[in-house]
Amino acid sequence: MAIGISGCYLLDEIDRIENPPSFNREMNNDHPFEVVDCHIFYKGKRLDFDVSIDEWVKVLGSEYRQPGGLWNLYVWDSLGFSVNLSATRKKVTSVDWLYYREPPDLELNMDPKNHINGMRGVQMFQQRKGYVPKGRFSGSIRLDGILMDDQFNIHELNQSRMAKGLNPFQESMWGNQWVHQRKCDHLGLNFSVDPNDDDNSKVDALGFGIAWIDPENGS
Image 1: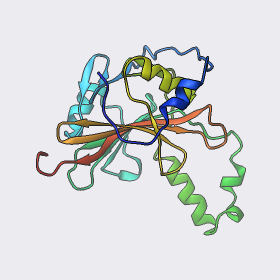
Image 2 (image 1 turned 90 degrees about the vertical axis):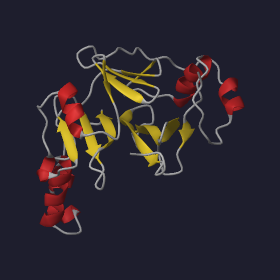
Image 3 (image 1 turned 45 degrees about the horizontal axis):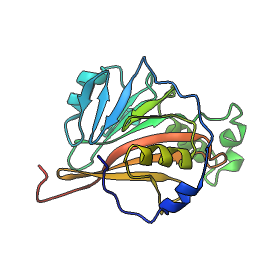
């Protein structure tokens, strides 16, 4: 069943593109994540949004860390996966699968001369690095029955979705990102693909989370 979204992506442009490049994708069988409608499944166990982080820890395990003592960010380094909580509701709002790796040569970022605030800038850079998983997710997750990973071609993705009767991803107005929105009871959820700024055929991160909450029907 197609999931309704708004946007101005020209579907006839997709139809005119023939034989887009195919990628050899493989599911991450050690850490199988699947997104079906409004839910994430990990090893067959369902994970919901707008719930306590305790519900996620029961499924993902307790080997997480909270960088810099941040109470609203939970990072599973071995998974390359992070979970964010709402600052006000203190419930799960979004997740990220991280594929991006820093280049091996970090001398430019570690040199105080290259930061406006000098050594403080270096320290802030080091702190930011701690917010993302030390490991990176590998292989594919399954989104609406379609495998997705760090290889990216928007035309191939949207053709695959349309062949299944699903609505396509739309180009975000907020920079280099492709998004798909879905309405789920009192929640509006947003799945995003963040291509690498230097190579749009590679993905830095996949994200899924709450875009808005209906205050009348929310808990």
